[in-house]
Amino acid sequence: MHAPYEPWAQPATAFRRVGHIDDKGNLRFAYGTERISYRIVDGHRMIGERSGLLGNLHVELKRKGMPPLPPPRPVRFAQAFTTPGS
Image (cartoon, rainbow, N blue to C red):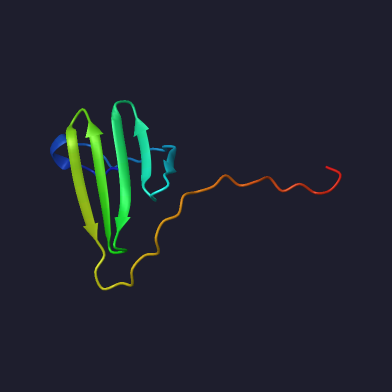
């Protein structure tokens, strides 16, 4: 998602992307030349990194006054449930 940016008269937008969670719990995805990753640190901070045409960008969001988030786990593909005889 992108917030509106008034100086360029850009509206808020949202895009559907396919990503994956690696073995360390980092959410990673790419589109075009852009590479983006997010990770939770200490249960209270989310670090975002983006590289591409605009160079290397970094953001850190902090969660104060809340209990820590549980550690992220890699997503596994679900197995299809089948009924006997199907």
